[in-house]
Length: 341
Image (cartoon, rainbow, N blue to C red):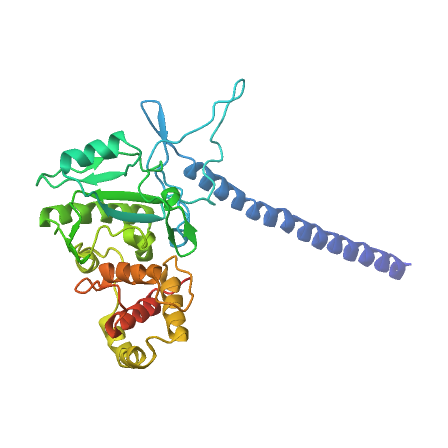
């Protein structure tokens, strides 16, 4: 009898212990869930932080970039937030802003006006052409803003670069007061130089714009780059290399890379220059770099003007429109340094 009672008591004890173990196991799970529940709290805090909007005189601004700047995704605004006002409803910014967005401003395009200061202002403010900024030639410290950066100005016209067209939609335009060029009876162009003070203004303005909008070097361009068959501005006397060297603005080739390409380039020019297959290769290289050119294996007018635009920008000492060995080496060095992505 005692043995039987002993066995029953032991069974109850074992069952009790087992039940306590199960209870302990069960009590761990809520703790884990509680620990995990802290994550949404952090996320909620992040959402709250990202939704902070500045209000000045009743106008809303959002100036914090919470997106990936390396992908040119930017949530910061450089103007007021424009919102709808639907009748009978309230637009709220509880979840503002979404990360998946970027700036309209992908390009910076430089021009000259071919007009003196007063006429440049009149034409760019009262006629069917415009630019976001106008840099005068008066020796002062003023830069004229003519169009809101968040809006399109009419400065680029029919234009293209790499995979983009109609660059008014995606660019900021800077006009520089300059009389352009005069051509003699043979068609040789003589360009007007830019003043040092004027270039300092352009450089400071361009630097501010490319930094704020994360505009890559390949998208800082001349009007002649995006419309080579009809435009020459800002011409061969605009100091692109100075902007590259001193302000880290825009593109320039590496001298060592140019020298590496030069020997073969000289052989190409001497032996293959008029072969349609070689011309096609050159045209394809121009197209690959960014110019809107259709390869056809001929040294046609469009190709000549495109080479001239390339020379204006990267080899201004000779802008004949004729491809020579140095220009061919420079083009290859540029394509190596700035490949199409």
